[in-house]
Image 1 (tube, rainbow, N blue to C red):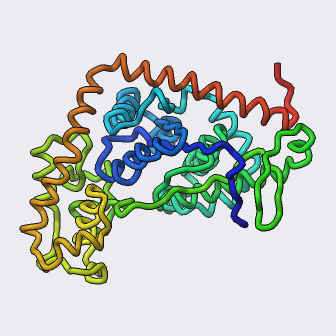
Image 2: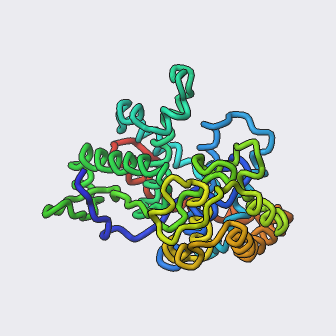
Image 3: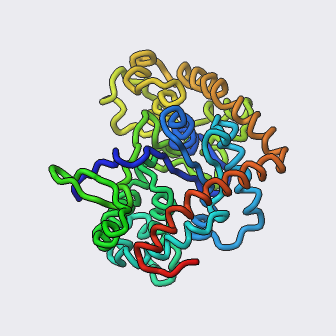
Amino acid sequence: MTAVSSASFRPLVFSGVQPTGNLHLGNYLGAIRRFVALQDSYDCIYCVVDLHSLTAQLVYPDLKDQIRAITAAYLAAGIDPKKHIVFNQSQVMQHAELAWIFNCVARIGWMNRMTQFKDKAGKDRENASLGLLAYPSLMAADILVYRATHVPVGEDQKQHLELTRDIAQKFNNDFSDRIAALGLGVEMKMGDEVVNGFFPITEPVIGGPAARIMSLRDGSKKMSKSDPSDLSRINLTDDADAISKKIKKAKTDPEALPSEIAGLAGRPEAENLVGIYAGLSDMTKEAVLKEFGGQQFSTFKPALADLAVDRLAPIASEMRRTLGDRAYIDAVLKDGGERAGVLAEATMKNVRDIIGLIQG
């Protein structure tokens, strides 16, 4: 697909996190910290995507508390719910409405090619839920119901964002005449051509030295809240002692740290710890190795533990404090849901007109 500039649309960031367990260091470095940084340059909408969580587990004994925990993490990390929007997805039902329309725009072949669906469905694909197959369509709706121009995503979500772009382009093409007739098109450049479309072709925001954090017990596996070993991850609610203990117990190899990136090849645990240090310190991996190259892990790990405690312990403390004020969290979500709903309904009124639906 030809790259499309979304500069004619109002710059807007959208992203979300599923409420499916304790947040950890990987969520923080790979997503939430980047959410905080983007606040300075964009209007931002940050969502707790609770409808998406139903594809992973249909029945939750504590879903409301998990939604609140993600919200508390957003707030503790520094997201400002007054200047930006923080809400949970299920409060704004226009997400589901647009997802159904996108289900009719997207092709089954597109969904079948999604790597995450193949991985999560496994060999018994016929027994997977329809929701799991259609997950990327709802993700596209999450983004495009606000006509968001930028989405911070990890590598594992990049394919889904490509599908979002495909859906937007197909909708724009399929309804091009009606979009033009209603005067709802926004100019976008496609190569040397200028075309009109209703939905932007959203750009991914990918980057950072520690965008992908691996398990502290196995450098070949992504850090996960579902890992049975709590030592495999640093939870955002861990106190200073727990953070320090987990880093000092992290798996390593017997070799000293190399002085150059090439020396990390075939050493996944060493590369992971260097990446964590880089992410927490806002350094490149090259700079970290320049400082610690030639040193043993017995020297590097204490330095990493001190850095992690310095960066994460205040967030953990604030998150625990925020979680103690359930009424405040619920008020933030209610306010954010109302503000998001106004924006989403404005988009959907136009979408219904474009499609030709009768609305009151």
